[in-house]
Amino acid sequence: MVWQERSQSIVMLANLVEASSVKCHKYWPETGTLSFGPFNVTITGQQILADYTTREFSVQLAESSEPALSVTQFHFTAWPDHGVPDYATSLLAFHKKVKKHHKRGMGPMIVHCSAGVGRTGTLITIDCVLEQLQGEEKVVDIAGFIIHLRTQRMKMVQSLEQYMFIHDAILEAVTCGDTQIDASLFSRRITEMSHRYPQTQLTEYENQFRVLEKVSPKPWEIPRNKALQHPFKNRNDYYLPSDDWGVVLRGDKQDYIHATFVNGYKQKRAFIIAQSPMESTARDFWKMVHDRKCGVIVMLCDLLEDGQETCYQYWPVRRGMAQFREYTVDLMEEKPVKGFVMRTLVVVNEKAGSAHQVVQLHMTNWSPDGSCSHLATITSVINEMSAIRGELGTILS
Image 1: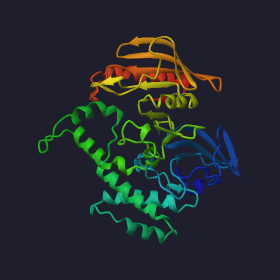
Image 2: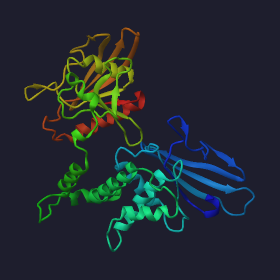
Image 3: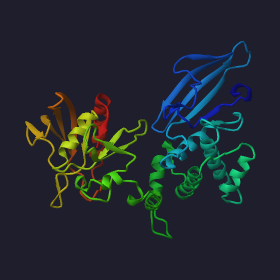
């Protein structure tokens, strides 16, 4: 079909295996060339990001005089079967990537999930309604378009959850607009964003931040039942970890910790965002670091701010050791750098007899009010963090 229709874009919305069930046969090679009957498919490039992967294929019909067909596959990996992504943001970014690539003359775009109705219908509806918005009438008719789709294929948009998600996605797209900036125009665009609009006296920075506040979920809208069941482990009850992304303390009966996984640009769950430890949670903190083999701890606050404890001293004060129940922490080296302190620590699980080394980057000149007055220090910390991460793996911040 790809060869016959000269399709140069494939959009895949399912994973190969979901909930122990095979959802799609792997129709491309991991490396090199793989034959499917008379067709030879060669993978020529791949880019893996947190929410999606793009792959470049060359497709050739054996004994054909026609040139090989170049095909790009866009594989969205963050969409659960029969459900919807947690937020529309990642899917909208994915959609922009696909639309930027696919031009007229590249053949029909092939879109598939597992059954080709639910997720496929959802993405096609979002795509067509966004185009509808850009037309002369500038109207939104989601229900009308799905009715139209269902005259061509049954059950397009399979569930109420998917139907509601389409509305959320369109609302976010309309509210936020296109915020992507071409790298070559970034410097000029930053200057433009600093100018104030005469009518409102607001800069574009301020306008965009207000939009972010509108489209972001409120703290009480996020499912956080586990956190609410352990109030003594939280510094406050406002910013609590979600049930979906919370870190679990492996093997503990009380397995809750105030910490959340966060995706990076290229890697899923690349970061753990943690509340600063309290005296009662320092042991849990070190268990998480040890068990998850975190290579870096980035500390962005002081122990005391405005006369209040903001972080418990969870490492030895000087070269030496500190005990946190079954975990012993040894300070191997402490080196002051401009704007931050670098500490090399070894955490030992005395019960298991296993040790793990971690580097703490403690930024000391970030103001308690959150203002970023030392951008060079932030850049230095990020560079150091990235270098260590390449050697040791996951980051904890």
